[in-house]
Image 1: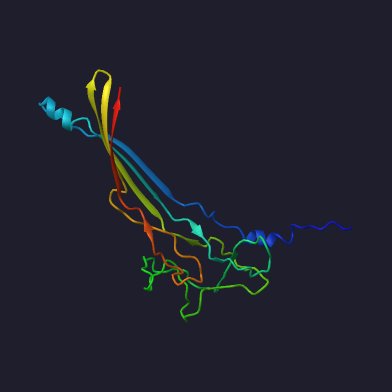
Image 2: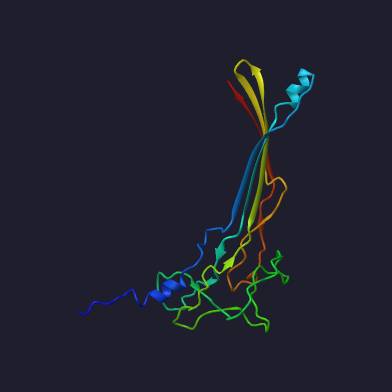
Length: 210
């Protein structure tokens, strides 16, 4: 029996599957700082109350992660165990939406789902086939920004004993981070960002060390 070279028919599919990793961000920036707030007074009591405070800050910014538009239907007829299958994209179609948040009933969209003539940008491939387009992870979701800060001071009570007060503020400017857009093409909110996260959270704590 002649040996079959199984790599040749797979090469086109492998090339089409090349894409950005779905969990990766192309750009990320982290900024951390610790600042000892300068203060001095001739009063010992005022110095104890207002001096020696430390401000820590941690900021992180990153671009969104890539994602695809796919269907859970077995269009290609693979059978049991198949994974989601990518949809076709109208050749030459613009995928750029207006990038605005949507309340579900407006025309705002993160990415375009309709062509200029009203037809769908995304369609299912012909029955029994996979798409031949290189469109895996062709879209990128919203980025995120996190702003965290803490203020703390250590008060000496007795020799080698301290009381530490700490106040933490997570996302202190209450900046919302948008969730991923709806990528299920049968949903009414397909292509829209309709939820967000990142509400401000604050906490205070005391720790006694001895």
